[in-house]
Image (tube, rainbow, N blue to C red; front, side, top):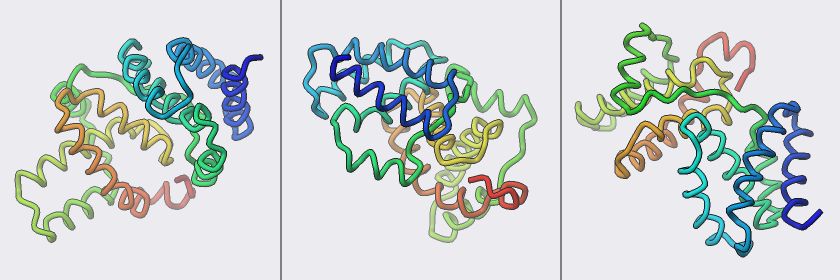
Length: 213
């Protein structure tokens, strides 16, 4: 086994030990095998890794991209052989053990349309609390409305899945695929970082009682 294959094997053994089933491990082995093929000849540096990841994700089908982004993110410190960061990620539940499906609707307006057509309205208390705090902090009406649309879309994508931090990250990745504008993507990333604490602290009551986070 060459060093790069050994690195992949180490990552897969870790997620298996954390609870990933055989199907998840096999899917990630295949996905990361494709990434490693792109990285053939690349130096094991941050710059070389990031230089290849964008093309790797772009070459994946829309249905594969959330998994591709997740794999690339989680494998990054294995590529760098940064044991300290691997330990830190493990301690803060930074490695995911599921490959959830997030549908792609084409663009953000189509996503909102699908949400409206479905009659979806299951929003946790965190949404109202966050938007209320934004109002108190002086955010304008248009800004609050934009935040509401983005967060409702995120919660719509997240709704079928367990309320864990790894699923939250993946739902964010799925939502990013619906935003073509770079500025809108950066706005979303800032928003979801700000909202995350509310989402964790003020979930649905049944999630709070079950202890699922």
